[in-house]
Image 1: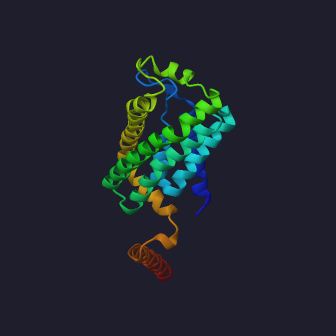
Image 2: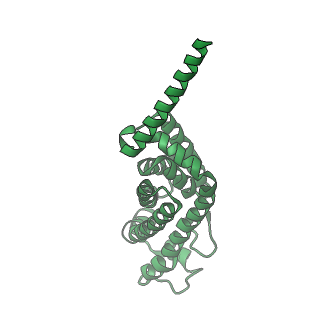
Image 3: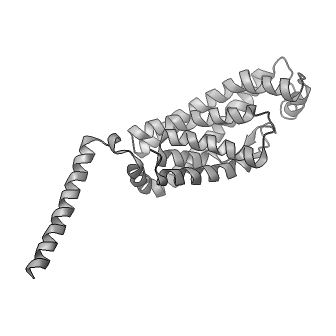
Length: 238
């Protein structure tokens, strides 16, 4: 599975994703601590090329490279969540595309991945991220996080925080993140789809190829050998 070509491709996509992961920025219509980034784009393209398992490896390597370069500002809680949310996006994409290597398969996979990744982001913010941030970063105080929320949501209090934050910030933010990545990936996909399919075929283990594919390969091989044999015979006759 881990051929030299695959390892080189994993390194390339991981490095590009890590660079874009580090270059994050805030959007004016979301709380400032929700950081937008384009790192999902090389992760998705890498998943199309290399498959779902490799896509998850790229996600993990992306976060690890970021930790090595700039460390963590969230006690590793946010980094863990990014791995889980990223894997929730690429796994459906890779699994669906493995069965349907068409534009329709790519669309279906990215649509399913968007829904699962967004749903997981809402769940993690409710039960992991916000409670951990309040406990670890703010020593149990809700004041700092409410201060960051009130410029956009003046009526936000500790009592109604989750009902506002989850549905007015986390949900649309992650939908936007996934949709932007999917749209850009589709634009790139139109130009590289043939190369993606050819490279994917080269990287697939022989045992995963269908019987029909093996027959086609055998016919091509026999034809090439026959042509070479015919050429060699003509040369001898001359």
